[in-house]
Length: 158
Image (cartoon, rainbow, N blue to C red; front, side, top):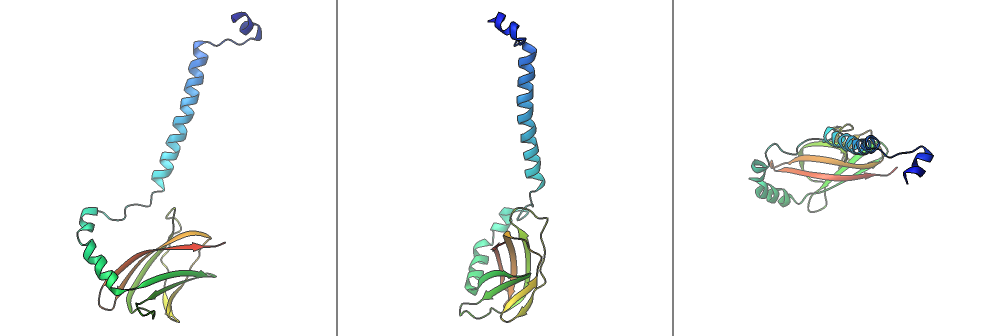
């Protein structure tokens, strides 16, 4: 066999095998490091600083929020975000304060805080939004001071 390999000008030697192995594993490691860096650098952050403390009043807060009976829906018409918050009877809920963060589901670079105005039974705000999956992190306060928090999923068609 060595004669055939020698005749073709190719011999598998230790340094060649080493070079192939270093190149193959080096490529795998480089790709893994690049993907790991990309994943960590685009992570939007923590939801809460201390999950134990956040969980202490969870059940009470959830019960109070559910007692409001609010239903939330969101839609985009042109460049306007329309957020409807209705009470148990289907009429617009009595919202004392409203704060919302609109962001893409995958990254935070396009996050925006819409400036809502209440008009025709809904909260409306101008937005610059591209097609895709978006999240609205909603925080509203009822007239009695009950905090209402919800993540509303918004699908924008192209």
